[in-house]
Image (cartoon, rainbow, N blue to C red; front, side, top):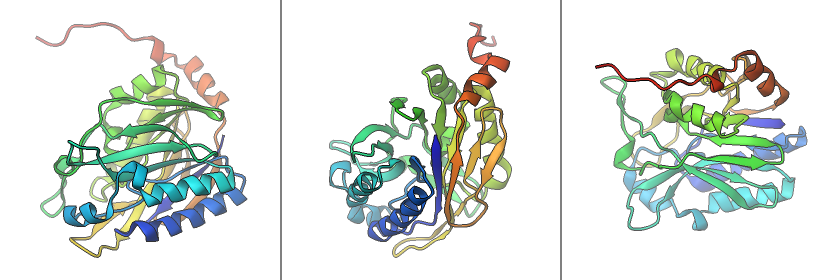
Length: 276
């Protein structure tokens, strides 16, 4: 699987972000990428619910996704992206959604982020994702001609049970499109990604938002960056640092079987009683 990992600095303007992402996708295809991964909320990074309500659309009406579908067809590229979209009624909150788009421009799988980022990292950095986004309830593995993909998003990374379920369902590659906090990134980002890869014997691919995000409304936001690719043995094979761009990495799926053969922990589950 020849995979492209994007690191971007999205603003709160979906049209502007589409142009930037398409340019990177074209560069990825020129390097022979078969599949490309973009970060969380690729279409719009905004802390202002009112602005989101004005610019976000339902999935079927979203011009950012329509542009990616056209690009997938034009380039013959699989695209895995994560975006903010309006939910279908009666749900009034948005959805934080990961979608898999085929080279024919069709959406073949979608996953809504399950775990909401409701945290107070510091006195100046607080998030209440559940106030604006509805959590999903369905884990997703999609079988593509390139391999089996497990879908997660950002804060999901802290919930190991989800990754184990995806691996047991056949995932060989698990994606973690993210907009990780700079307050937690230095200490937690890489170790968590390596742990998820080691525990599952999967390739873990984590495209990332990076830098100071321009906002036309509300307060601005910063993200950690350091888009990573981690092998099934836990080795970091790519770290994008703090630069916007795209890198193409070859994912050898035979390493999944090799890691799981050496340490078959996915087959060693035991039933047990909890503490009394």
